[in-house]
Length: 82
Image (cartoon, rainbow, N blue to C red):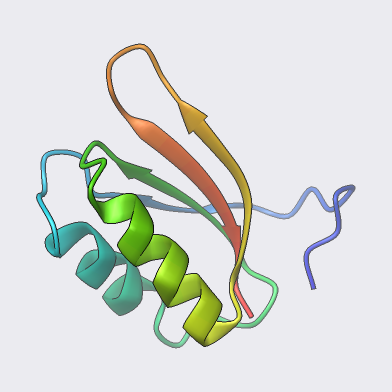
């Protein structure tokens, strides 16, 4: 389980420039086999993929801890893997 005070290294996945469904597919592929509790920083700029990422997290039990929209259109998600 991810704790707010946990300073463990964050696994980063960059899906900027990819369009739906590729960002979510990249997330799914790159997180496959990672241990439960791993924190993932997921970067994407395809706003239509947000619903897909939320649905994937609901199905898998992953928890979206934060969503931050940056000035350059990139959406930075912080996710704790189930």
